[in-house]
Amino acid sequence: MLITASIGVVWFLRSRNSEVAITSIAVLPFENRSGSSDTDYLSDGLTESLIFRLSQLPALKVSPTTSVMRYKGNTDMAKIAKELGVDAIMRGHLVQKGDNLNITVELIDIRDDKSLWGEQYQRKISDLLATQREIASTITQKLQLKLSGEGAQKLAKKYTDSSIAYQQYLKGRYFWNKRDDENIRKAIEQFKAAADEDPNFALAYVGLADCYSVLTFFSNAPSADTMPTAKAYAERALAIDNSLGEAHSSLGYADMYLWNWAEAEKELKLGVELNPNYATAHKFYGNYLANVGRFDESLAEFKRAQELEPLSLIICLNLADEYLEKGDLKSALDQSQRAIDLDPNWYAAREILTLVYLKQGKNAEALAEAEKSIQISKRDSHKWLLGYVYSQTGKRNEAVAILDELKQGFGKTQVSGYDVAQVYAGLGDKDQAFAWLERDFQTRNALMARLYWTTFDFLRDDPRFRDLTRRMGMPN
Image (tube, rainbow, N blue to C red; front, side, top):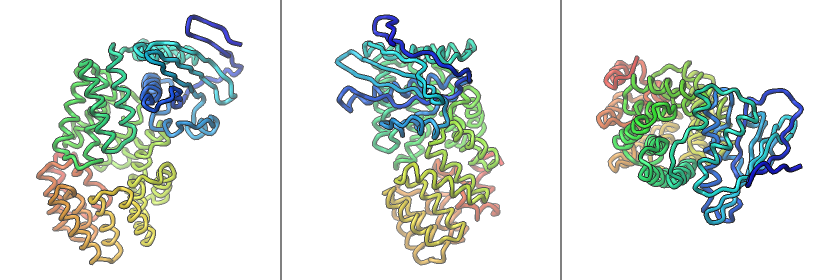
């Protein structure tokens, strides 16, 4: 039975029999029924905005964007809920006609397959920001979450009054979620446009910080340019709103790769404190702990991040890396394979799997995975992995041939000294390994923050390793 509550709003099927509280929810990607993929940024953006707003509630576990976007177009809610480990699912669709939006939303308790609530909104595009605040507030009421004064304030918070800036921000997040060089640069354009439209829109600067902090890892952009830029944008966001946990995490992440270790840990811990349900905050802090050799603490942060975001590729990778570092090869293998199952075309997962196979003495399997990883990445710098496999399997001539290729790439700024050093470390040539690391030290390459990477285990007992970390200011 449908009951009209007000103009443009329809309520339906609100009751439920179970008294068991709902403590977790997944907001599935809203379906775009506008007939054009050009407006996907609106449906995807609405999804992300609701996730962001609901994630501010400490009593509610909310599946993050990177997890739910994998289910775009998937209607098997029971399977999705089981994989994400949630009690409830929110789904909906959006239709744009000119300046008008029609948004339909439904909240379902997946445990007994009952609809708890549903509404239809007929609004203008300019009202989208207010509408998503309204939806989040209504969901909170229907779930009967008890909000503190701070929680209620976060839920009702207005990040911008500009509908144009907000739409540009949504487009930026849409491109950001694609995670490659081309789309990160598109995201930068949109975030900059949003910031130009509303210079006090803090989230636009967080978006820019996030883009620049990872750009160097997806392209040949020098970290000497990208990391200071990321830091500046994070600081701009915090100057506007110092309560944004996301901004503190982004600032700490940039500081880490700028070798500002004490400042990095302070900001990363604050990011976790301000938004404990933000998986990326735990992941970033886990990266810091791993980079300074605090592996047990790092593993705990990555595990927490995976609890919050179970389908994140990068978190699977971080966990695999930590298990590899601790010698738990079975768990490292499981996490690597989990990432590959999620995305067979992600080169980084095959990179870790290669290193696991090497530790297990499965040389043929390691070589096969290394070749797949390099083929998928299409990056000359990634050939270090093949060189490292050769170095560890007695194929010295082949490893030296790869070294020659890498050195040529270094001269063209396509390869880092860090890449070359990994192959030399594999060959047992400490002098050359440290010589090539020194080149990156002189240019303050962000990769140098990862000296505790497994390929450099051979170097750690050498006094030059401790000297290098000391000169980088790394806490020992």
